[in-house]
Image (cartoon, rainbow over all chains, first blue to last red; front, side, top):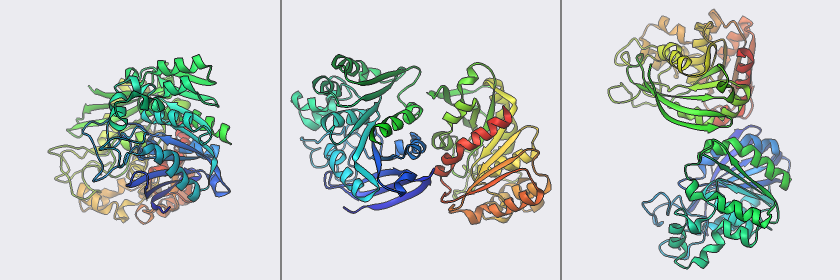
Length: 277
Length: 277
């Protein structure tokens, strides 16, 4: 499992790196970022996976979430994967919400997406193996979070693999994609018309059916311009109906931007660090 | 003094806004950003001016410095001006370090720059007037900081107008432009061949000749890739020779990037807030 270093910059007492490797899951080169806190110089540290939203690369959250200081303080690493395969020969769509930049964290079973759009496999298995074998992070102390499409990814992955991701949170997640214009089109394209195949990728359905063994933290902006597409009420209802331990916080005044993520990232970093530490 | 709101997003307990206005100083439309802390809802707050470096717009520091949380906590506003006039009909140069994105915070006296490149006038007078009259900020409590070319601007402006900018700091400032490839070319282009006209725009010379009535804080990365161009040693020597109150901190491991700025922005925000509060 080889990878190439694109950049490394000191940030607080740790290091923000950007790397590229050849992915077997997607059959493409993939870029990812890792922040290592100072504590990683002295031994393995817990690691928080941050899945980004539509149109994002590894770079958006790395640059705009301002998580590094808190990761350094909490002694936890943070990994920022890309949101899809990219490049020539990779299928795409003109819409911003399908294809490159919009992998939706599923393994596509339908053409033309199937050959490269294997983001579930990539994020759950391949990239953690690479990171855990090459950086001072502890594969038995992994948490996962994300924003919007990435919040959808974090919740569905964590509820499916709680043994692998031992803490979970989300910012403004796409909460019920089976019943939203942010979901129906993409799940049809990637997984086909059979709605049964969608169930494993709908956080509200998974919450109703299985939940998560630990506490779940969700932050949602009350002035989010995409509330109709995100459907927070569906997930909140499923959480509370199940008596799922955790918190669903509706934050007044905040929209869907990274200003919202940045405003609460410290809470999430410490939430995960406490549970993984 | 009219201006247009391009965006406003809640950030922490305050608001990050981006605005555009017609500048008389530059004869162009200019975009600027203002962060207002929660305290600004209850009365006028101190304000910190952040001048950016080569190639930057108002956006880089706004997005990458992660200053908002500290400004909110300290109850201080922050303004991010652009680094030059821009647009059609505005002179430019193919080099990244001359013309648009590289105003160097001077009033150009030479063609073709003279008609629009009046950034000293813009940053010292015009934009503060607009901001102080339209936002809840106190024009008697203004501080100034900046990065690289913006650190040069902050230091030269503060030493020239200490009555107007009552606190000053800088990140990796261009410290001795009269004697650097980041300076000679630009000062010649904007101000002409007469080196006497450059003296008012050289922080090391101003420090030797007049200094600053308050304390000065400088942070510089020891692994900065541009140390030869920045010449921190010249400014440090001038500061200490003069017994200028303040601190020059050489920070090991840090380079010239925004990761460096972000790592120390909290120190600078609180430094200014303490002195302006």
